[in-house]
Each structure stands twice: as C-alpha cells, then as structure tokens.
Length: 286
Image (cartoon, rainbow, N blue to C red):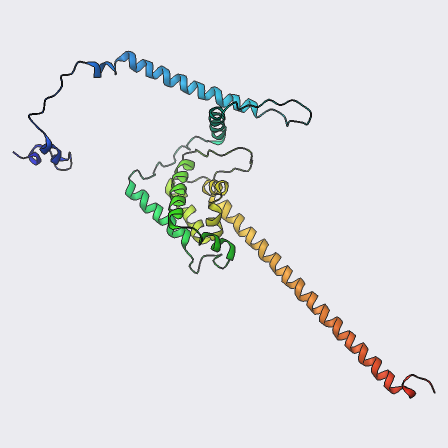
C-alpha cells in the first residue's frame, strides 16, 4: 500500500510519509511536555495577559491626562514626561492609539489572507502609481511627475505594500496617527476592497497624490479618506492654475501698458518734431 492510499488527496502531503524511518529511536516522553500546558500554567498565562492589558490601559489613561496640561508658559517649570527611549516608545505607541476606532458593525472583513492575492493587489497599486495615460489629470504637471520618476522600482514596491497593509489597518479602525492634527476624518467603506479600489483610482488619476504618498502623514490621510484628499488636490490644482493665469494676464497687461507708453512717447516726439518744422526759423521767432 502506498502513502497515497493512506491519505485522501489534498488532505495531507502524502510524500512526507515516505520519509518515515521505522528504525528511528524515539526518546520516551517523560511527561514534561504536557506539564507546560497544565491548567495551572494556563491560568498563569491568562493572568499575565490580563495584567499586560491592564498596564496598557493605565498607560493610555496617563497619556490622556498628560495631554490636558496647559501650554508651557515661559518662566514656569516643566517636567519631562519621557524618562528613557523605552519609556518614550511605550508612551508614544499609547498616544497613537487614541484615534483608533472599533470596526463598524456590518463591515466586511475581506482582506485576502493568501500571499498570491496580496501580491496581485500590490501589482495593481504599482501600475496605478506609474500610470501616465490620457485620463491622468496632472500628467503634464512637471513637479509630481518628475519626483516620482526619480524613484526606483523597489521604492514603488515598498510603497505599494505599505498602502495595502495600512489600508487594511485603517479599514479595521487602526489609524495610529498623532493627535496634533485635529482634522482626521475616516471615510466609511463597506469593505476593504471598496476602500482599496477608491485609493487605487485616486493614485491612478493624480500623480500629485502618488508623490505625496511618500510623505508619511499624507499617505495616512489618503488611506483614511481618499475622496476628501482627491477633492483637496483638485482644489489646489484649480487655485494654482488660476494664480498662473492671473500672473500671465498681469504680465500681458504690463507688457501692453509698456507698449502703449512707448507708442505715446513716439507720438509726442513726432508731434514736437512736426511743430518745430512748421514754425518760421524752426523756433517760432519772426
């Protein structure tokens, strides 16, 4: 009987059974393995997890209280809150969680678990970031296009993975952003895929958004609210175009006034010459 006959197809990698060595000497079990998973040890693990969770909650409360302190006025004493690198890291991590939210009820948990699908989505993001087709609204804008064309393919790969994973986290309510900006507004999406599609389309249409993605704060804002950020980019572009148009018009008007001024000066000069030639003696005396 072969190993394939022992296991249903797809249930187990039957080829592994062929590696079985009947002459291998197994060390007798002394029971120590199972001692590690005794009810007493399991309860100890639960107690430790509970203590760790409680410590995290207390740390968050401490951070909240510290944020209520008034602005340090010159001349008043100020005590540092972070006493070491590890203290800073733990407190800052707690600070970043203050804007996290619970997953909305009814929101699909559809982030793909398999690496093949994740890589496919990363490829879609890279294609969107480097796209310069006719419907790319700012492909003629030199600054963002020039900026992204300096990037290596590996850097696009990095950014695509970053966008993918943070898109998942934000969809799950984990924003992890500092609160020193108060304009955070998370756009609601019914699924990860719908948020991903909105972000991908924004990156495909606007290279300024791709360039800004390499600004860490903007990248978070884009993933949190792609619709708002695209409107902001459009508004900024409209304002810049108007400024450029106004500047061009002002230059044309200035040039026109200069031409008109030179023309008037020529007319006056011709009139003076004509008047001088018509007078007897050329100076008006008789």
